[in-house]
Image (cartoon, rainbow, N blue to C red):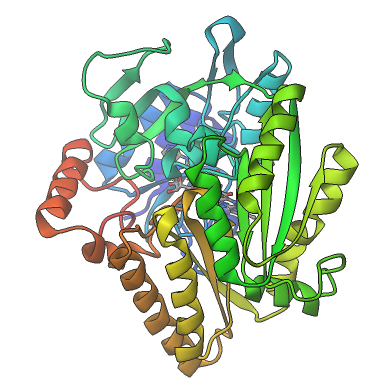
Length: 460
Ligand SMILES: Cc1cc2nc3c(=O)[nH]c(=O)nc-3n(C[C@H](O)[C@H](O)[C@H](O)COP(=O)(O)OP(=O)(O)OC[C@H]3O[C@@H](n4cnc5c(N)ncnc54)[C@H](O)[C@@H]3O)c2cc1C
């Protein structure tokens, strides 16, 4: 049966240009950051909550899968279309609806770029704390759906900790509001926390009320070089065991430093450097001085080769050069990285990093690990050649062994990137059957026809 009558209805609802079926446009929306493609049947650009509700109504009638999409920067296939699906791109719902500094909140549509929220908040001495590395282009709807996080989250928490309330259209067509606009709230079930991190599998988020916090007067940086991974991991434990929470606590392992050296970007690091921590402190000018001293004390210990601090913008930028070059350096190792985003209790970070080294040897793969050590969250990158089937098979075995190790250490599959289509096969390793069945029941309550982002988040 031709889809033309359906597309006519969609065009009446959204407007002529807001329903795209041109193959070149469909191709642009056929994937996210993962190397898999599936062309949707249409890409829709709603401009309001009511239009989103209309799309869900038509999709239910036509039994079409809906794929919510922000900027497509996700790296677990969360925004990957399903066959016959309609992508719902929130690019045109990109307005900041309300900004109330006195109440410390901002109401935004899902298509607002994350950094723009922070920029506006700072004009009133506030900030939006979650800071994903993709903040310059990812959209708040994608952050909400994935519970995104970043370096500042060691002190301030992830996206979920900064949402007061949501407006959403459920997969069954109902329109709901969750939470409130107040900083305290003890009414009803906490549907906000359920929808944040639900990866578009329960509802389309059409509006969010975000919590803002005071922006620090000053931030300062510390770069510490160690002679082993283990010495750096022990320093992370010492930092997290004392009372001053860092503004960032980032780790680069031995393989990262090797990659930087090969890439010519390790200038200034002592010759024996095998691991680096990048640490930041924030607060008023006086507080920052005190906090830097406390953090430097905790960071100093066995295996430390050098510690350098920077207070001015130029000094800080200089200290961060190696870390900022890392993505490019890693790309030079192999054509593709399989990026795991595991998280363990901070006290187990050392054991995890040792195991990753062992896995690299056992499966004969370069594995580069770095990330948000203060949360025990590591980006473990298996560097592979996709046209080498034997290597890809070893990588698949290595991934599973990594997940098993992480779970044995009391950790979890994902710290911030989410599950999407890429990691859902591992969920039965982390959750028992009753827990998974309960999650499936929640899904069918919100989305009885299974049209909301199918094939994501939960195993089949
Ligand atoms: C260079 C780079 C750096 C990154 N750094 C970080 C980082 O530091 N921290 C981090 O957490 N992630 C990071 N990411 C991953 C990614 O940017 C985040 O997951 C981000 O939150 C995705 O936002 P997006 O707008 O691109 O969403 P998309 O990729 O388009 O979608 C992500 C998910 O959200 C769903 N979704 C989108 N909008 C809605 C909506 N309105 N309602 C319901 N569901 C919706 C989609 O269906 C999908 O499941 C990085 C990615 C890259 C490429």
